[in-house]
Image (tube, rainbow, N blue to C red; front, side):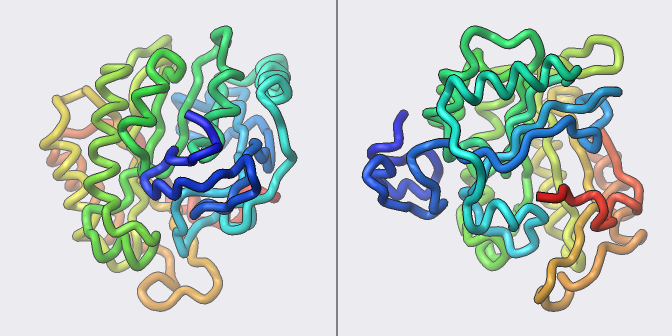
Length: 285
């Protein structure tokens, strides 16, 4: 796993990032850290009172047209860090009281991140990603990650292609998430904090309830009751230039329909209030 012939993500560009070649993600052969913070807006079982120790990496292996983090993901930005510097950032966040180390969109920088995770940190490591991951790459994180926090955005291939440039999103993400669950197993708790397990996030998109129902069907059909948690998100915030129906927030009726389907599938997890769609919750970069 290195930057020389980069095949970290499903794009498999093969770019030599050590020589300045830029693949799909546009990232160099060194980690770009856009922001570190105590993030109190993650799921309560993760954030706790102090917040997750979030490390936001520049760039992304998806090109979601509605991305709230596009300021750092579309054109990769951030401070360059080697593994030792990244480790010090993690330790600083822990000293500030971080409940965990939350690696946000990390895949494109794994050759730098993996050495920084050894020796094992005294708090859980969270792998916070868009779900569009190679199962083979995820397999190499076995023993290093405690909590996986992937998106499962789409069951609709056409929607995945038009909004994220990833026509094969569903089949790729489904394999990756199954590898995550294979690694860490069912959720393990310490009081009200999750210490190990998989939380699958799903963002409901306006005008696309059917996509959400299919995603929840897949989760319910694939995993045993209690094997994963679901975070059903209503925080979609329309970005400038989005066309209908993506130029609006989701309605209460849309959220309630998907929430009901989640319960009918016997799934447990987390929900969001309507206020989560406020642009004020988007980090300031």
